[in-house]
Image 1 (cartoon, rainbow, N blue to C red):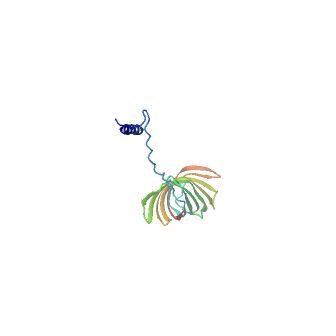
Image 2: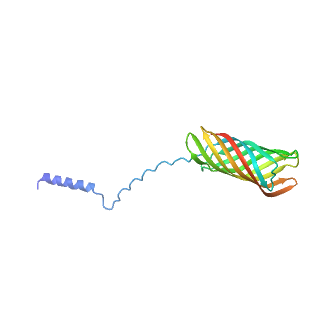
Image 3: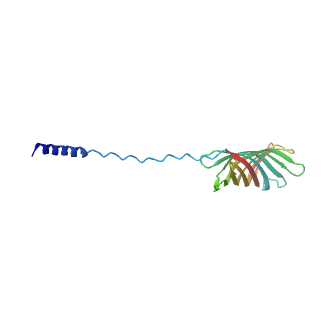
Length: 204
């Protein structure tokens, strides 16, 4: 065998041994697939509205069907990442009845939350929002009799239309009263109210 052919064979053997993986060596682990970027949580906007409410009918204990009751105020729906709107309602309420009776005071929806359901997503957005009011307080100052504190709650179903961040809502509601407190004592029971509320506002 000539020297030239020997050199060629040695070079081929060295190249083959360099390409083969070493005995017992582990193959490199595959690169993990790239994960998609996390989507930011959806946040509902802050909503501020002017409201007007009228009691259409009432019955049961702790009520008086001869009275006329209305309220006007504001409702604030705070931002949320869970699709639930937390509401805070502050209103001026007035009522009147026979024998010259009248009263006025504050109506406060302290613990209230809703779950908006989108019906139409277009230039005009339509939503249906069930609203549960767990704690509502009324502080009334009658012209005949002592100051009253009333503890109430309610369940409403609000239909709203939003256009360019302005919205108009209408909400029929079933409310109930559990307690009336005055300096003379505390009266408990159950009173039923059917109310209608309209609101006009803007979301930010």
